[in-house]
Amino acid sequence: MKPTTRGTLAAVMTGVAAGAAVAAPAVAAPAVAADTGPVPVPLNGVEQSLGPKAPTIAGEVPLPLPGRVEGPRYVEGRMISDGDVPQVPLSGGLPGADVRTPLPHVLGDGFDHLGLPAPAADLRTLTPGASLNGPLSAPNPDHLGLPELKPPQAAVLAPVLKTVPGANAEMGSGA
Image 1 (cartoon, rainbow, N blue to C red):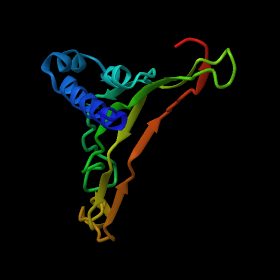
Image 2: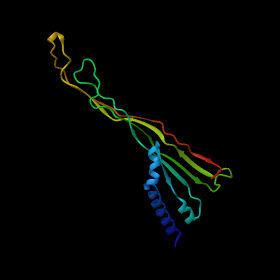
Image 3: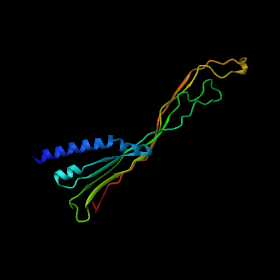
Image 4: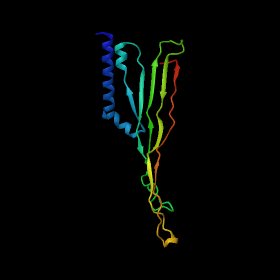
């Protein structure tokens, strides 16, 4: 078998093994209890079939968690409460990855690997919301307690996204 055919077959088998490892129920149970779920990418088959050292790749997939929704609240001077369509908070994280590949001493004797660790980062979001106010004002004591007409008001509350992602490119000795 040609080396290119053998390499393609090894890559396909590695992908199938990675998919089976992620779909297995034994792997999914511990991930539910944590904030992130590990995603290993097994490349041992590539290394055994082609010969050179294969890079190591691992990932983390965050699990989103819904937060407490603030309901509508009364605001003095308005007929309709504020926050009729509330913003829903969600917390989770950005996916992380850790990639390391061996180097064959290209940059000298002190550099054996190239790495890029990018840990999962916290992510806080708020969904869009809406605030409405009707065409009537609050009861006016000068008009025997009857409301006055006024233009209706509508506002869209913008979504919020807060995160601080980070990554580190490194080269050094060791595998």
